[in-house]
Amino acid sequence: MSTIDIERARNTGWAFAKNQNAIHAKCAHSTMSSACRWSLSDPFNDLPDRDAYAEKFWQPLVRAMPDLERRNDIFVAGEFNGKVWVASTGHYVGTFKEDWLGIPATRQVTFVRFGEILQIDDDKIVRGYLLLDIVGMARQAGFNLIPECRGAELLSPPPTVQDGIRLSASSHTETNTSAELVNAMITGLLSYDQTSLESMYQEEFWDPNMMWYGPSGIGTARSLSGFQQYHQIPFLKFVPDRMGGNHVARFADGPYVASGGWPSIYATTSGADWISTPLPAGVSVTMRVMDFWRREGNLLKENWVFIDIPDLFRQCGINVFEELQ
Image 1: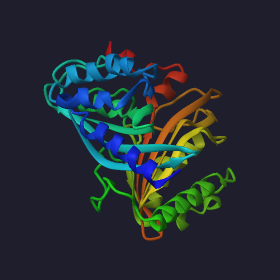
Image 2: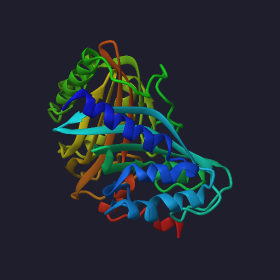
Image 3: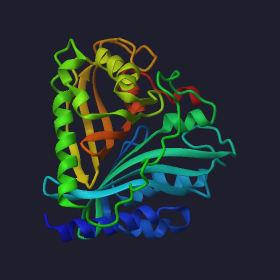
């Protein structure tokens, strides 16, 4: 894959991202292939083409928030498995004026956190993956779709160094260093011996003051020990046999790495509490996940994480949206 191909994809992806605000939605729509297939968070799930994306997801969201604005915190481009991709994360923000997904409108400013990965071919988006933190959006409206989280319930910030929008080619050395660090870290995660966290040797990869920004329901944690206490230990008890799945893309761009899987994880539930709520044991589940990492020096400093929690709960026989009815 040539650098020119990646930079053309970067331009197309940025045109979509910056023009997706309600007033420019038509322009953003034109950057998609008419046959562009989308996979979104539950309850949207798979949408077959550009028109279905507009009809089922985008237009209802704009009706709910007529002054909708897309705020991008990270935007990166790269190659994976012979295809070119862009990825971004940030928030949709607007005044919540009409009900959405059964969530009652508040007429207050509301944030919807998102993670997005797009495949681009011939200057058009041909495949899209989008995870939305709908649980967090509902919390802002006063509705807990799932119980309180273990970590801190916070609005996820942009990168500390404010350089997450990558609009030109990054250094190959920087990019390769980031990719190698994340790949080594993930290899460590997969080395878990079912007994000791030390078997994953994660201390080698994370800054002592790292920040982990998880989805609503899990929350935000600081330091490796905070991450382990509020997410990793309960998660490993909940799905002790978890295995990596189908990563649609994983690529680096300077100090950043983006990754997404549909699904990323295959596992069997144990019945142990993970996110402060009991889920049944013995259920075979998959998890849709996205990660965005920022490297600082030789260590990972920040990690933005998305998990489709409503989809996981649905697999366990719980429709989190029923409470809103």
